[in-house]
Amino acid sequence: MCSARRFASASSPGYWIPGNVLRVTSSLDPPGRVLIPKDRIAARVRELGERIKLDYEGRSLVLLVVLKGSFVFASDLAREIDLPLSVEFLGVQSYGDSTDSSGVVRITLDLGRSIEGEDVLIVEDIVDTGLTSRYILDQITARKARTVKLCSLLHKPARTVAPVQIDYLGFTVEDVFIVGYGLDVGQRYRNLPDLHVLE
Ligand code: IMP
Ligand code: MG
Image (cartoon, rainbow, N blue to C red; front, side):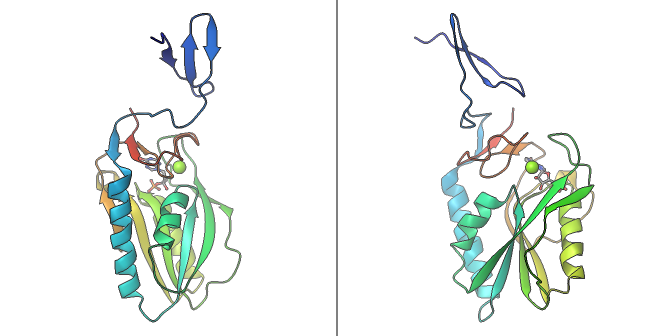
């Protein structure tokens, strides 16, 4: 039997084994219970892709991937949308501590080209207070896209500060902090295949 005791801190997650220090720095070290398993996510992503395909039939689409949180969701979603599409990335960072957003948003990576006159679908990981999505919607609308819609994997309605219309939604969740499938806490856990509650 391994007598490893779990310890974790922001700077040194890992395991302590008496007489030895084994640092398990993998972010696959599960943070808490699975909220939504990968099979359910995949099924929902497939449904969203089919609906998007039907709604945009005959048009081409710009998938605007909001970094970093939506990179996993967007890469799965893109492969479920059977339409001509291009992918653009927008990097944003909302100021605040690791589990709370302040609503003050900074663009860390801007679009590489004009989206004027195009049908743009913004892909978000989660709409929490809604402040980040509100800011991005305003930015993209100001750049004269032909249409702008929002797709989000998750929505936490209990936390709404700025209401936004989510045109395509994966799952509604309770007021818990979620990691995995692209979502992080302090940049960790993005590579977990399932969505977990941080406990
Ligand atoms: P907002 O509060 O809707 O502006 O959300 C801002 C950002 O906070 C989201 O895009 C996520 O990156 C992050 N965020 C909010 N809730 C969670 C969560 O439960 N897990 C991980 N990140 C979150
Ligand atoms: Mg984040």
